[in-house]
Length: 357
Image 1 (cartoon, rainbow, N blue to C red):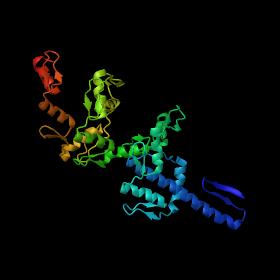
Image 2 (cartoon, rainbow, N blue to C red; image 1 turned 180 degrees about the vertical axis):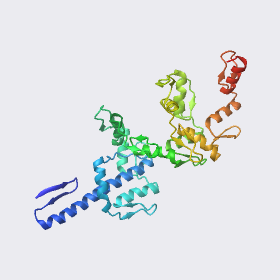
Image 3 (cartoon, rainbow, N blue to C red; image 1 turned 90 degrees about the vertical axis):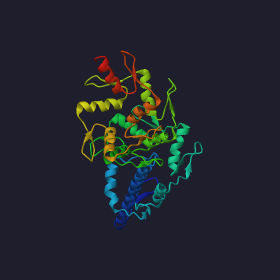
Image 4 (cartoon, rainbow, N blue to C red; image 1 turned 90 degrees about the horizontal axis):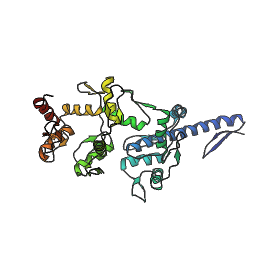
């Protein structure tokens, strides 16, 4: 008797009997197909749950396993269908898990912080945050992680592997979820909508930051001057004002920047890369934010409203300039005569007229 398939659940054998071999092989290949289909559905469920802000620790298939999976998957029947979206599953428990995406049911709750999850495995992974357990160790630098997915993302720093490529601009990413988010720049999809004003966003984190505008919560405080900010990114930018630190320099012209993304945006001036295109007029831009601002010309959208007079603006910088009219704040001062202005353009005009510069 020869062993040919070994799993954690089943052990199949083939006898030397000629007629028994054919039947056993058919049973084996059916089982293999079902296991591979289960792996596929686990992967699909993981991607859906990532979109709903749930991380899993499930291991990804290797390239060879993925190829094998695609070859075997075609003959497997999907007997269980979602009545909400029509998606099919080969296993009933996967349909049950999938339905929670539609119902919002999260039956597994953390007794430490009250956060809820759709699967017990996700709760178990979450508990590592409270216990501090980090069972996944990087083989390159010994850094440890609480989730296998985080380890895989980290290891791509060492390997440089970015297997997920955008077919629009050929930009590559280490994780499929990052590619999915990036593609929204090209498609214009904004699946996260504010229930207060209807504004939509490409990422849930942007929606969370936006909600602070409605509540006027200023959650991030500067430890240097106690000034508070709606967004952590705004605080980080403000902190550069205290340190005057500009650690990122352009190797082509020597210009320095406080933030890496500012340097990357600047370098596109040298390379001429304009990867973001407006589908309305085909004008191209070097950054997604520039494209977004431009698109408001076509849509007429003015999402930024003055809290003092209800006047609306298409971009935040215009709103900030306008608000200085109400506050009387004058940030820009002349180094020659100390006169102050509320706009940089006014200072520039003053300097040119009165100081011949």
